[in-house]
Length: 353
Ligand SMILES: [Zn+2]
Image (tube, rainbow, N blue to C red; front, side, top):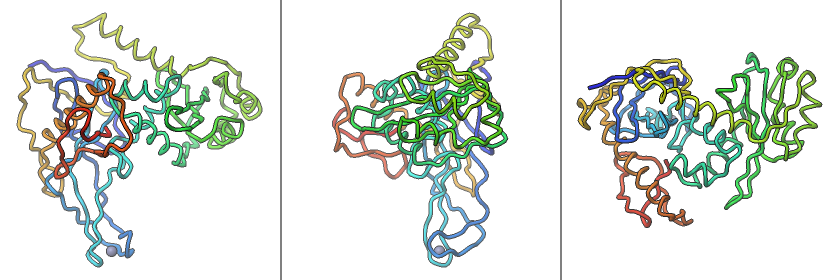
């Protein structure tokens, strides 16, 4: 048994309670403080929350770890209104309803699309091109608020376009203050001057005044708007700069790891806050994974994650064999016990992982 320690950034309040490696994928059991108060969306009745677990695990996709997909598992739970009996599932703060991936995975997808295209990003992540498109649409629909206290000195504005099946053009505002870690600030529809204005509108006056450089996609009409709205900034035209920076950061990590293979710590691009000790078993057997969930529920996360990994792998095989997703294929959304279906090659259900 060898053991390495890695730093993993986690959304506020989220903790890792378990880990298991699944071949070329990673499974994390996560938990977070569940809401104590509940207001019924149907009858507006308010009461102390009584979450009931189903004993099943939900599994969603998160960012890659060492270039390999990682999955989060958490207990499926719901609340039933004591007055009208309306049943509502517990939605974690790190994902949106009906999505089988984390919110930060969505941002990662948007970031990868800069300088790339939906097929390439789908292939790289082992997800459907349809999923890439849906994520971009989600991001556009979401009104993002940029923290007014955030210190931003460098930004990028890029166009991304989904051309294949969707005529979707989007403008992305990225924070390049820490160039090794570009972060998406705003995603708006369109690719014209108006789009650039709407993207920059989320910044306060002082934030705009504090920006020293902007880098824009030279093909787009962003220069003029930046020159107008970012009074103290210099323009730098550098096509696909974010994608390049991101790629450089990843290459840097690879080189670093390669240079000292015996180092036990890996400074990955993971945005380190919380620390998780990750024991990597040499064989496939690990300790029993039946961790206790909250509210007394027992979650068998390992089986659910293994299932997700199997589906993702099957899906990637599918892509390798050139079977592009056909429309009309029934969607397999998420990997939830009780909704399992068989997955067989090209004709089966398509996991939206
Ligand atoms: Zn109710």
